[in-house]
Image (cartoon, rainbow, N blue to C red; front, side, top):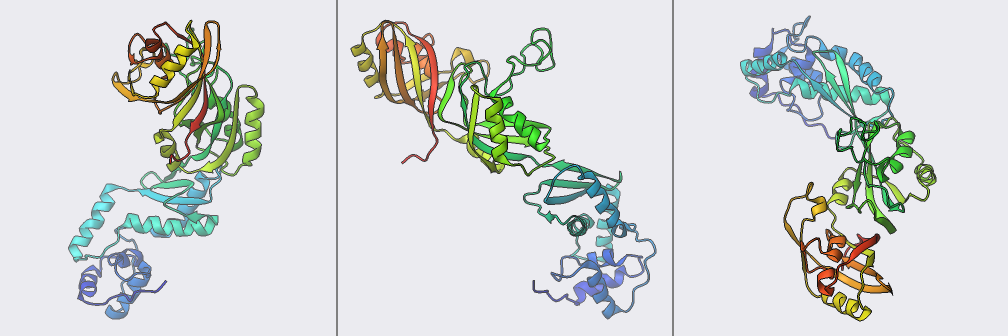
Length: 409
């Protein structure tokens, strides 16, 4: 890196003369001009000024930092102690300060008239990071750290933030009794009560929990968040290539795992209930990508209803030619805004029919309520298949057979 010459014009020397005799240490004296002369340390700036103004008086007790920069090795040790139980290769540093000290520094700047000062917070964070890089052999990476060390200077401790790790993949749900995520008991809201037999849950387990447990064991994490590209009903299977998801592990102790082994453990322990594949390490930004995606989906639907095959085919042909208006279904009205949404059944075909029952395969826009489109939901879906056929229909089973998350052409 090319060093920028440190200027010694009046904008530096005049404030420097006014700062002489204030007992500033070389770090704090040089910091008065810390934004001038790129590539210079603050003590180097102070030495350069001393060449022009003569030797500076010794600083026995700096009134600004109070010797803080001499104690940076102690803070390095505190950072390492705070992170000793965790794996980290990239880190960031921050600090919390006594407001009176910061105010004292600003008052000094005004008194000496400097316009190029660097804050003590910025200088401390930088110097702490440089020393910690050397001591830990890790990389200072403010943009994407594994951990963040916050030096609480008034208290004398380091607080540690451990950033999550993320894994992306696809899951297939083979069990019609599993919710996608942990479902807190509605009576006790997760605390534990007689109704949920002390579990705090409405259902014994979930797709999230079955997938998360081996990952928590491998990483030593403290908890998870599950981010799916939509969700299927509890009694619906998720088949085909599976539903994309991102698993977030909170406060992992280990960030390096043999992913293939963890995936194998998920598939072993969740056999016949959940399968995962295509697992890769992911970034936090992929959570937004997954949550905001709106792919079309294909379904297989088993329907009970007495109706002629020809009439079914005629109704399916008509259904794909016009939009449907779906008011928020009664079964989800407690958690979704009550409004009318316009959706389309893109493709529809009859694949099997017996006396009183038939099976359909459909492709629909994201957000289409398939059960309500079949049954009508007391007129809240218009038109529904039941309306088009003029007979009552009941969905007996529903499978999601594909999530079409590939780019549409």
